[in-house]
Image 1 (tube, rainbow, N blue to C red):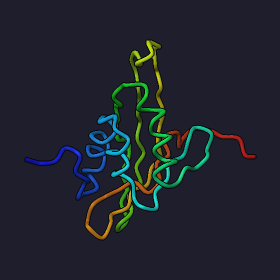
Image 2 (image 1 turned 45 degrees about the vertical axis):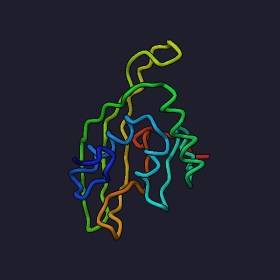
Image 3 (image 1 turned 180 degrees about the horizontal axis):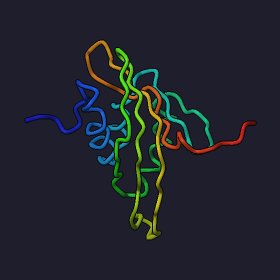
Image 4 (image 1 turned 45 degrees about the horizontal axis):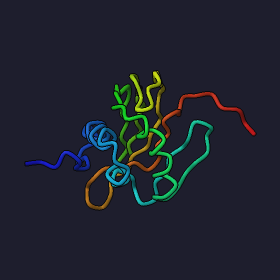
Length: 134
């Protein structure tokens, strides 16, 4: 029996592993998907590093109680680094009863660790969004 929360051992396995981790709606499970040096970027462009900050950002998504859908647009691999362009969405009725229609394109970076498993180094869910330069 394979662990549904196992990390990918091939670049092509990154998105299925990501979906399993995300749709667990469990912050601790999802934190296992991040590289030790990993970060998540919020909708304003602010980076969040370390388990506590990443976990707080993840909780915002997981509090909706919805499963994410992902369509992989591009996957480019150079040695131990993968660049992913992913169209994703949360659509449905959230736990609080509000209708959610969150759709975006992510620009993410994954890195293969010494153990041969792929983890997220940069999780940029709104990577294609235009942001103002401060």
